[in-house]
Amino acid sequence: MRHTHDTWQAEGDVNPVPPHEQSGHKYPGIKGTYQHPTPAMRKHRLKAFDRRYARGMETLGWQEIWKQS
Image (cartoon, rainbow, N blue to C red; front, side, top):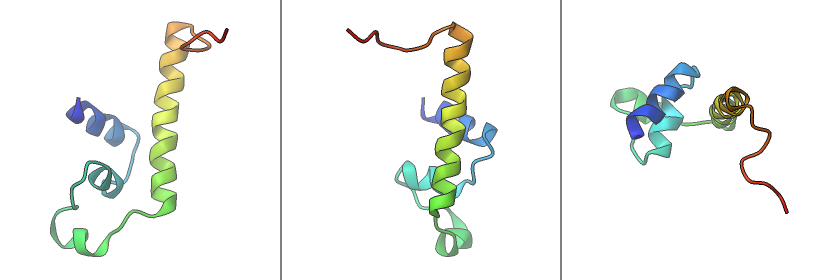
């Protein structure tokens, strides 16, 4: 599942730094020393997953996952 998650982030054009942080790893090489996730990078990552979620819900024809009672 972790590899699928990484693939989805690559498909969403997510900068590779935030996924490394999220998985608890340091970005390798010299870039790991000098590049750090910014709030804008994190926001872009979340928007990419939100778009994926919305497409999945639309494909299923769902408006919600759990019915509110």
